[in-house]
Length: 522
Image 1 (cartoon, rainbow, N blue to C red):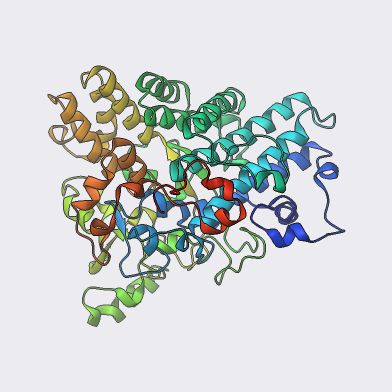
Image 2: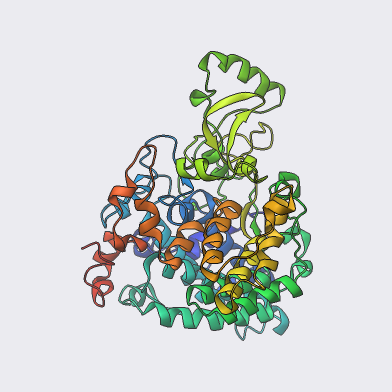
């Protein structure tokens, strides 16, 4: 869904949470919600505004969610010390540091933007429901998509903070500022009901117009439900949701792992949801926030190598630059997201996925650091530094197969679970003897899943979530070595959640009423 400039005034209109200055002003020329929702086009543009918040650096636009779901685990670490990643990746985060923002990437930024989605979604639902200017079928379509996006925001909120404020009505800012934290289980119960409504009413992938392929489909809602059921250890309902996607959707596993990440196939059959980004779009993200040169999407730059670090033999740098130039490419990234030391050392050498997860050479030049090639784009024309047009993959079918395997094993042991895990492993090895698992106990299969999800889904915003739900984050991190920081020494049991930022606590003291420790950080 390419961003239209009309979203700028929508963001100004609706994105008020955490923006006290805006609340204190009396703008005369901004269209009010009451007057804006006068047509289907207005309502759909408002939903587009929700997607543009999702694309902010604090969520999917840069490494906002990567911070929480991948850094500080056992897959990704920076190639050097970096303030932008240190508080979470090194487990030094506290209430005050949660407020420190670098390029709109902080705990506070993520909290505010997720709640902006909630606030805006509630306004949209309130103004679209029963709106005579919008046909009934369109109304259902818009509301179901909006409910999905709100549920997605709440899912991330509960994953990151556990108990949290929860509201589904169009409340005023003053009302919101007094809401305390609700039990996480109650929030999850509410969003499961909403996600089922969304799945029942959202379009299938083949029903979404090509120009809007960045929209979520009914299967996006289904995969979030499956993940929640697995988090609850509700294995049967988790398996049922996975099988709905596998058997009823048009999604198929791609023939090779490389095909999944081919930039020429950004909407391939395996991808359930991918957020699209455009190059050279000023204001693609939050209005009024300074952007780096190019004003575009820059997550790939975090994974691209930095020329000053490479190659391993520095005397070959001129030759490397010459080869890059001949390929229309450049090492124009930051190198702040590379394969972790442990990940590199343990990744099976005969696994065909290794090359895209451990990229340690370029055109014959040995590199200093192991980069994750599946997220790299070195093309100077389509993907210059901090101005990429690459999609951001969110969910894909291989994840669902591995989820189905896990659910089946937890329910009945590995006998039928092999079918699902081996479908994924088959393309990862040349020989059947290498990819075909058999003869494992339930516990051995469980441990095989720990590794298989790591090799298949590395860097795809799953790992810490998986380690936390398996109850092994502390054990895993404490038994690793890292390049720069000491997360293995710093991690504590409460680091499965984040602290609510200090500014939020000062604005709303009720956030401490049910938990004066602020998730253990006090």
